[in-house]
Each structure stands twice: as structure tokens, then as C-alpha cells.
Image (cartoon, rainbow, N blue to C red; front, side, top):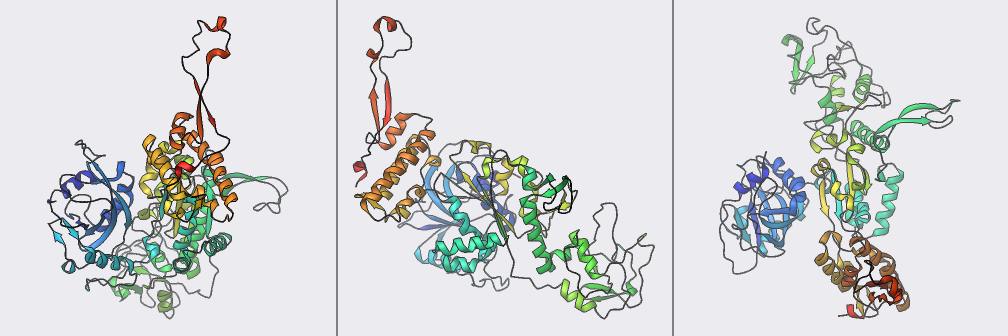
Length: 617
């Protein structure tokens, strides 16, 4: 499916609209073109395709000629808001088009929404054509109120959906990326707490101490794991592998000799914990998907069945016709649960009555692809049937979902294909346990069937200045939501050292770096956060000089591959001095015809004392 080509077709209905004042933009997606057939597919485009496409180009230049820098664009799918973006002020005028590129306006995706954010088009004061409209402040406020009010009901009363909560809006796989020092690792704590405990996060989002303490509590409880990828990190550490277990250690407590056994890696361990919670606390979605049976496929006579709420049960005393299936097994309730888990991780309770569940239009298959499993007959009547049914097939959703977080720092430094292996497919939202297209694969060492539960979130960080980023696995790019984190000089507004405003200093340096290199190699605000708690003028000045001497200059030196002239251009002569070296230091008789001597030779020295005065306003 060529979404980019479809997008070109989708944009053909734009008009030239003249504005008397600056306004934001509403863009209605054409739902009749390939790549936007339904809300889910269109959302996937904004979530995982557009953000990582070359330069984030979206709009056709000729069709949208009134948009201005920093204008907000609201994308509609029908009457639902599907995404929110900002125009970055860059227009690509290259007329070349192919599957990977489209000329147009550069945008930044700010948010992507689930279904349920309905607006009433008739309430807007917009000037519109078939596809695009410009909205004023009143319209913008109306839309933002819908997006910000978590309890607002759908305007379309026939649908009656409610606003999704903050966890639902979080992508299950996401990567925070940006230049060094922009707070990527720092913000993984915020992200993790927002996913696990959104109420606590909203109440304490500006209280770093409280968030950090809560983060550590969840880590100790095993709900959050933090790892760092590196070149030697392996599949065996991440998923599973065969490892030596010395005598007396966990797994070989009573042994006298070293043994070798399959040991779970950190991702598999966390997945098991997340799945265990889903099964014990949210039985509805998983249990139903794994143990539904089709009465017709078993050739059971209708007069032996009683239908109740679309669920079939055996009439008292009835037996399954043996010619329907060559053999069948009897399973009690606790055993049935154990089969689903593949291992007995439940405590057996009072339920001991055998029962038989038939659900219309579904077939249960055993772990062996070549055979089916029949779950026995009811030998002790139907007295406990209703209780079992209500307990295990309830249609009520458990809203107290316990989410688990795996944070992978420096995710692009590892060999992604080697580390993830087959999991690169399983982490997709549509392939996770409980999803319509759920996939479980047999692991190579343990031979266990393994899947990724829906309540496991992966948060990665990625440094755009890292030279290994070019090796980022394409499969990983497609399956993750990428959130850019760039230097935020506004966080440094209150910092001032000897009359020098640090926010202005950072902005000036980064503009020079962007000119000489690119925006992916700018310098983050986090480098200067150590100035925050210093009180005396002397301490602040000493720390600022330390930041430049031991952090900023070495970083620029690496960026420019030891091209000191560029480092000097960024910082100025008050930090790096250029000194000419004369050839008279050599013996004239020896160097007359030497090919190593140049007419001019310069070296660069870092000054012993820095002068920041040129960075003053």
C-alpha cells in the first residue's frame, strides 16, 4: 500500500484561501483513498509513519499557501480529531516525487488521538473548502477544550463514547530522541509514572522529588525495569538463553555441581509478570479469546444445548457425541486456567466442578497445531454454571490495569536485530496478546510459546548525534512512536551568571551549530542545569567555565571531528585562540626542499580563562 501516493490524491481538493488575520488550520482527511480506509489505519500513519519519514513533509505546497510559522493544524477523520501538528516554517519546493518523498510543508506531530474526540462542525466559524478550513481563536478554544476535557462525552450521541484516558493515549512502544543533553533519560521517569499512575502524575508533574520517589518504588516492586543497550548486549540477556548456574545459586540451590539451564532475560521476565496480572485481574479479554468453541464444528445436536445470552451450555445429563471428535479431555476450572498459562501460576481455589463452554463462532486449539482440545462435559449438573460464567466471561472491563514499563536507554547503540530477534514482530500493538491479530511464537531455547502482553510499555531513548544512528534498524523505526526532544532554552530563563543570560547564550551557540552542521547536533539545556542551586556569583562563574571547558568544548570537538576552526567559529576567540606557527623553528639547511612545510601553519589553543562578555545582550 502506497500511503504517500494516496496522500497526494487526498490533497488534490485544496483551494487558495485569502485571510485577513492569522488563523489555525483544520484539515479533513479524504477517507475514500488508499491508506486512510479507516480510523485505525489513518492513526497509524500519523503515529508511526509520518514522524520518521524524511523531513516530515506532509502538505502539498501549491495547495496550501496561507499557512504561517507555528500555526496549529488539526486533522479530522470524519468528525473525529485524529492528530494535532505544528507547521515548522519550512517549505520544500523540490518537484521530485516518489514513494519516499513528497514536496510540501514541514510539520511536527504534537499528538495523536484515539477514537472518541468528536467535534460539531456546525459550531465552527471556519472558512472552508471541501478539505481545509482556517479557524479563529474561538474555534481553536472550542477544539482545545474537547482535547483537554478527559470526561467530555461524544457530541455524536448515537456513538456515546467517552474521552480516552492518558494511558490509552500513550503509545506502547515509544522512543524519545534528540541531541545530547535535552532530558531524554530524565523524562523517561515522567513518562513511566504517567503510564502507570496518571492521577499521581497529574497531581505531581512539577514535583520532581515526588516523581522520582514513586519511580523508585515501582522499580523495587518490579513494575519498572531500566536497562542500557550496548554493542555486546545480546538476545540471551534480553529474552532467554542457556547459562551456567553454580551450585548454591538460584535455580541450583541444592546442587553440588554447576548446571546449565535456560534462563529468562529481562524482557521475558517482565512480560510474564505483566501477563500474569492480565490473566488474574482482567480475565475477560484473554480468557474468552483462548477458550471459545464452535458448537457446529463439534457436531453437537441442537436439542442437547440450551442457549443463554449467546452462550451455549450442555443440558443436564447430555453427552458429547464421540463421532464429533475422536477423543476429548475433561478439565476442571483450575486446570483450564493452567492450560492457558501453559504453566500453573494460579493458586487452585474451591472450583472443582467440571464444565463445558461452547461459544458461538470460535474454535479452541491446543498448543499442538495438529490437534484440537475438547474441554469435557459437565458431570455434576449446572448448579455452578452461572457463577463460573459470570466470574470468567464477564463483559465488564477491569479499568484498574497494572502497566509495566521497560526503559531502554541508548536503544540505538545495540544490535537491534540480534537483541530483539523474533520479538520485533511481537511488540506491535496489533500482534500483542489479546489483540485481534495476536501472535505467539515458540522461543528457540525453552521451546515455550511466547507473546507480548498489552500492558507492557517500552520506552527508549536515542541520541541523534550518535554516529551509530545511521544503523538504526528499519523494523524498529516502523514499530515505535518517535517523540522529538530538542534543547529548551526557556528552562534556563532564570539562570544568569555575571550579567550573562544563559538562555540567550545557549540559543546563540545552537544557531551557530545548526549553520555549520545541523539541528541534530545542537547542545541541550541539561548541560547548564547544574547552575540551578548555586548561590554565590563566584560559584556560578566557576561552574559555567567548568561546563564549557569539560563538556561543551569536548562535545563540539567530537561533532566537528577535531576541526578546531569550526569550534572557534561557534564559541569565538575568547574561548579558542588561533596561533600561527613560524617555520623558523627548523634548521634552514634541512627544510629548504621539504614537502612537509606549509606557507602558513596554525594551531588552536583552549584559553586558560574564558571571557563570556560577548554573549551579553
